[in-house]
Each structure stands twice: as C-alpha cells, then as structure tokens.
Amino acid sequence: MSFGQGGPDWGQGDGSTPDWAALAERTERSRARRRRWTIIGVSALATVAVAGIVAVAVVDSGGSGTASDKPSGDLPTPEDLPSSTAGQPEPTFKDEPPPPPPPRDFVSDARRDKAPLSTATLFPNRTIKINGRPYKRAATDTSKGCTDAAHAGLGPVLSKNDCISLYRATFTRNGLAVTVGIAAFDDAKTANTVKSGYKPNLVALPGKGVPDFCRTVTCRTTANSYGRYAYFTISGRTNGKPSTNSDKQAEQAGRDGSTYAYARLQQRGKEQAAKAVGASPG
Image (cartoon, rainbow, N blue to C red; front, side, top):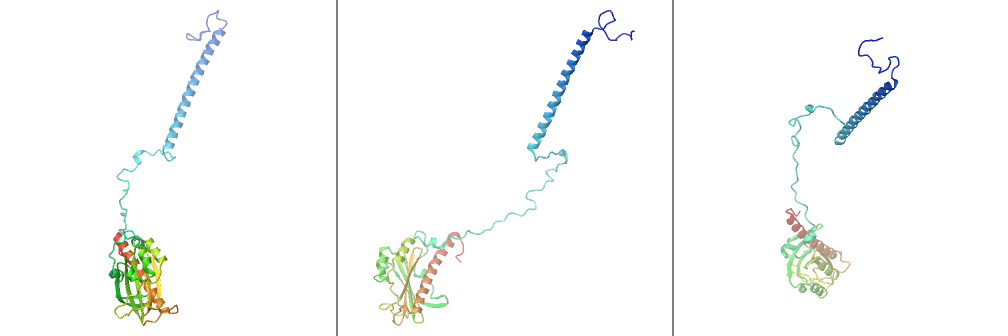
C-alpha cells in the first residue's frame, strides 16, 4: 500500500523486510546531533547566568548594597539640590588675645626683664595698705654697689653673688617702721641662692619723720626671693626700743613689708607679660 510519493524510504530490498541496520545508523546519528545541541544550549544558558551574577556583584560592590531601578529622569536637578551654605550661619571666631605667660617668667632673667627699674617703679605709692593696715612711705634710696646698704653679714652674700642694685623704701605706722630692700641679680637661680644664704641685716633707712632705727637694738627681719630679685625687711620701734620675739606688732610690720615687696615684683611681671600679648595687666 502506498500513501503517495514522499513516504519513508525503507531502502533497497525486495520491499518486504526493512533495512534495520540502516535505520539504527540513522537513529544513532540523529540522537548524537540532539545531544550536541543540548550540550551547546545548556552551556550558553550557564554562560548567561554567570554573566548576570557577575553584573549584580559589580553593582552591589560599588554601591550601598541596595540596587535601584529608578530611572535617572526622576533624580533632582542640580538647581533643586540645597546649597551647602544657603541659610547656614557664618562661622564666628573670638577675637581674643592668648592668655599672657606667667608673670614670674618675665622677672626671672635680666635679658627678658626690660621694664624700667628704680625706686619709682618698685615703690610708687606714698601710702599703702596691707591687709587693712595703712602705712606711709617715709624715704627711698638706691645703692648701686649693694654692700653700703647692708650690714656685715648680708653685704658679703650680696657681693659674692654679683648684686646689681639694692632698692630700699621705709614705711611707718603707729610708732613702727619697716625698711623694705629689693636686690636685683642676673637670674632667679642667683636670687634664690642669696635667699638661702641670707645673713642679717639690711640697713634700716630713716627719713621724713622716721629717726635712725634698728641700729644698735634687736629688730625683726625677713628674707625671700621672687624671680631674679631677693627682698628683705627689717622692722622695729621708732622710739629706739628693741623688738624681741614677743613684739608681734614689729613682726607683723616686717611681714607686711615682705608682702608688699612680693606684690610689687609680681605686678612688674604681670605688666610685662600683658604687654607681650597686648592685653591688660589686670
């Protein structure tokens, strides 16, 4: 029976038995072609999948970890972005000078301590008040050699340490008198050496209603230093009586004189420190 031309070609033969070997060969070739195409297709799909994974990884590594498919047309224009300075207050800076250096620094070395130095700058006030106790200035004096304003014990100490000048002022109140002496040296180390090696006494300075005092009687004395200056006091009674350990008023007058010397030297340092930075000495 024939279904017309174009039917299967069963090969050569007598028409009654198909050629099984030829059919098997053709079938095997067809299967081989299908396997090759299947492998090629799977490989192509795998390549596309790997490329997609790599692309996603690149996007994730370059951003914040969250991909966005928002079109660029929805992003704000530069004109819509807020200005970095618009509406923001301008920074302000305090126009204040730095704090002045410690006052002691300016009076610890002669090379830095350049302010005028005299009895007028060290003892400028005619009247002073120390812790509520008023005193009147009676006399001032400057000794360039230092030793003529010191007794035998103190004189050699001043001379040995190259004392530059010794400035004295006497203050009085209620029958008491105290002479304050400020000796200048090259540096603070020398002044401290003089304080440590102090031996009495400073010569008491009379004048303007204050008689010669503390010459031949016992009086109260002090010694200290500040910066390149050593300062001393000698205090006692103006009536010539001795001031022993029991004379607390004379002792207090000596302490008041020492306090005044310290305050004046500290003020000297403050003024120079303030001038160095253009501030008020306070």
